[in-house]
Length: 406
Image 1 (tube, rainbow, N blue to C red):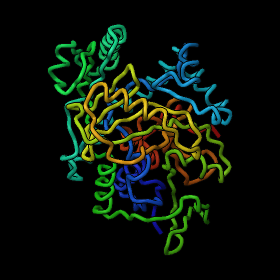
Image 2 (cartoon, rainbow, N blue to C red; image 1 turned 60 degrees about the vertical axis):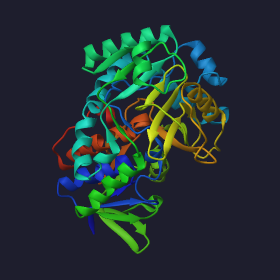
Image 3 (cartoon, one colour; image 1 turned 180 degrees about the horizontal axis):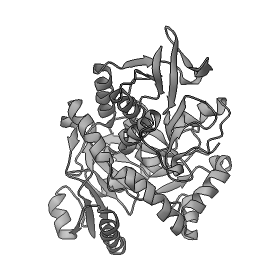
């Protein structure tokens, strides 16, 4: 019997397993696949310590209409999925009001600003420094209007949260990004983020560190989790794995599992697509803010990533966003040929309150939750893992805003 089963070997689950292990807990980390092969694999590879305010629901009528009819490059809706989430999306809209968003950001920013410090010792201990760069994340603008707004926003975030940035003129940007094919209005260089040349491999390196420190990795189906006596069990290939505690860190699949235990999780999904290319790309991860596209240099090639598609978890992929993203990216850089025949896609697990769910399950002893990180699971995994481990040990009181309603 182990002390704790952690379900899910993405960045959140692995970060949680490592945090519990540091407190002397015997942990078995369970997933149906190898660590880092699901949602954590497919992101832009940026540890976004500058992202102190979560993505809000578009409030302008024009923004909502353009997303609904597929004209907004940052957000697209699969119409057939919207009826499933009428209530969560309505709550997301309400929580995105200026006053609510400020309140939520006060909690969110405290976690985000810790993320770099929580990753750093794991990167070092896992010997993964070769995957990491510390020269920031660039946000470019085609329009003078949006560039001016971004510069003002950068100044405000620096003043209110201490976020580091540098505003770059068109001429400075052209010097820094010599591969650009066109002249842009300017950029904001966020100076503090770390970037990773292979996000899935970083998660795998953390998982190897967990195993080297005595942790157990197991392949099993999370849906077999059941209460057993005073604890929990899950069925593995060699029989039942028993533990006093279980942590649900399954990202977008967390709600499906918890539904079996009687919980209703108001989660919705922001799907993202990516594809790699053989040609030139930016010097460091770059967001084309006016087109809703991120272009990130990776070991596998230049990774082009889309904005968000509001889609049901099991709905088929659609080509619209990745095609638009590729066209936009190719306007900026000579992308070359695609590495893969088809684009990868994954689902960001989002909550209406824009905060992850971290803490104890309200109706089951020994069941703990760590999911719903939206765009920032890769960034926040070690941080919310540390927070949850502290709560489980009785050493930390989590913000009430992170709790799952009973």
